Structures are given as structure tokens and as C-alpha cells.
Image (cartoon, rainbow, N blue to C red; front, side, top):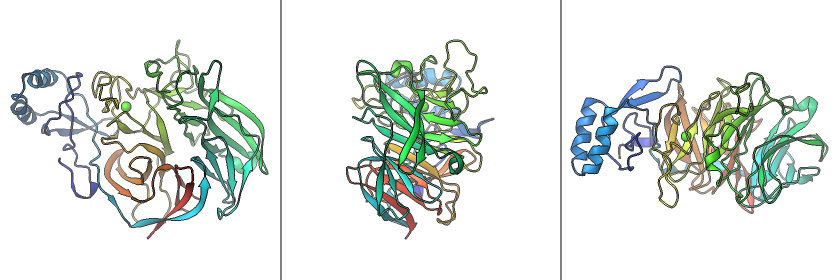
Length: 436
Ligand SMILES: [Ca+2]
């Protein structure tokens, strides 16, 4: 397939699936796609040209169903298609890792205190406080009771932007409800030595869902204005609620640091919509980071098979799940209506095969020459660290590193300018990423 060397994304040549109409997902050769600069997002849009349609017709002539499908597609206004990862090979170098700590039980989230000690959440429910050198640790008491199991437990963590004064720690976790139901929730408390005081749940996903222990989302990211983004999942069995604005299933929400609702949220005052919703149509967002240059939110989302996505969620927009997606169910069954639909956003970029992304961070430091401003994403499967070079809101290239590091659950910049990783294992590690 048309993959440029070195993982460079070949604009307009990425493999595309026909069609916006929900026709069967026949793979077709490149349709002579051209790119048009999106007006507001700076993102490329692509549509079939007459040259492309000739290619398409030639191909489609092989099968009547395909011809019909493409013919109908070309007769309608073109819909944007996102660039697909060229699936570059994982390379050994120019970075490696130094082990800072090990013996962490499925660590999920990492936050650095101002004195360089580290808080690490473990999925089973423990919050560990590690010395700056990683060699000793204590368990923080007073943490909320979590519904651990499946993918759920103690998950994302963030410190208050004003932590040095208020000592507040924010935790995302799976919270039990009635009759076996559970949902993602956000608690905050005050770190006092090795104890969390004044713990209060400031926000709860609604409704709580029974019959699933998966898809909790759960990254916490503070915006520059002090509001808190909480990324969520579709709870696996609640897919029909993702497009329903009266739930917070499959949403990114934005709340104030005390759990109240920012007055400038996009659905404030709209009947039948939850006012905390920032964006919707998400499947399971386990990576999120604020671009240090723009202050805007970027998210990385677990898709179904072939549908992992990089998004740049904007206020009030619909990111499509489960109506549009590049993925199919792991059973092979199609999902939704196709890959594009008016009123629904395309991802900035998607992965097929998937990388099972978890954790994302922009590199703002100077430790890695030439990589300033790049977005790093953890991969659970196949594992390792993915670097995305971004340019004007588009992915310019993708490179994959650390072939032997295993499942990466979180990626966090340290106060020393290095990136730190958590690996997802019963003997999970905290690793510093260093140039080789
Ligand atoms: Ca999407």
C-alpha cells in the first residue's frame, strides 16, 4: 500500500474505504484523492476527482455490487476521509528507557508533585506515593472505594493547577452504584502527608451501567482556564447512549475544579442535554493531553478493530461513534453507517491495525532533539511508544519506538523534561525515556 518511507504519512494516498453510504467496506485502490484545506480546522479534506472516479470505475467493474456502491457514492457530495496510519515498523532507537520503579500493580495514571515525588494509581484501587528516585513508596490512605475489575478501578489522576497552595489531587475511578451498576466518577481530596483528606466525589457519569466492567475512559486534563476535562467511554454495552446528549456515556465532559458546570460549555441551557458535555460520539478515550502551544485538548480513542482515533475535540462537536467509524467489531460485524456522515467529525488520523492507545503527552522539553511539540502516545498492543509529528493540526509523520517495553498505559512529561511511562502488568514499571 502507498506508505511513504519512514512512517511518513502520504497525504491523499492513505488507503481508504469506500464509502460514506455504509456500503460494504470493500478495500479499493487510491481514488486519486486530492486534498482541500479545511477552512476552520486546518485539516485536510479529501474527495474523489474525475481522475479518481475513472480508476474507481475500472476497479468497480469487477463486481456489480461494488460498482453500484461507488457510483452512488460519487453522485453525492464528497465527505472527508481521515488519513490512516501507515503502520510504520517499530524501531530500536534512538531512545531507550531507564527503570525508575517496578512492582506496581497495573499502574494506570501518573502525576508528579512539585518536589518530584510521584503519585501512581493502580487499577486495583491503591494510590502509591513514590520517592523522587522511585526507590521507596508508601500507600496513600483515604482514597475512594473503587469498583475494581475488568478494565475498571482507580484510573486517571491530575493535580490541581494550584497544587502547591491547595494540595488537591483529582482521581477518576470506577464507582459502584445499585444492583451491580457502575460508572466513571471523579473525586478530589487534599494530600496531607500520606493521607487524602476531605475526599468528595465532584462528578459522576450518568447513568451508571450494569453488565459491563469495560470502557471507562478516565483521563483528567486541566485546561489553561482551570476547567477540568474528563474523558469517558461507552461502557461497552451502552453504545446506544453515546449519541444521546441526555447521558454522559461516550462523552468528553468539562467541569469546574469543584464539579460545577462552566457557563460557557456548549450545551448549557439546551433542553435534554447534559450541560457538562464538551464533545460526544466517543468510544473509549484513554489518552488526552493539552497542546502546550495552543492550550487545546487532544484525545486518543480506542476504537473497535481498525478504528483507533486521534481527535482534537472541539466544543459541542460529534465525533461519530457508533454511527461512523473506521473500525469493525472484533467479531467482524460492521458497525454503524460507514466512515463519514454530515454533521459528524472525522478523526485527525486513525490506526488500522490498531495500537490500543492509552496515555498521551506533548513533549515540551528539550531532552529529545527535534521532537519538541510532538505528541507521544502509549500503545498497549502491540506495545511501545508512538511519536506523532504534528503540523498545523495534521499528522505529518508517525514513528514507533521501544519494541521491548511491553504494554504502555500512561505517558507523562516529568519536571526534568523527560517523558515517563507506566507499563501495564502485574509487575508494572515506571520508566524514564532517555536518548540512547
Ligand atoms: Ca470518531
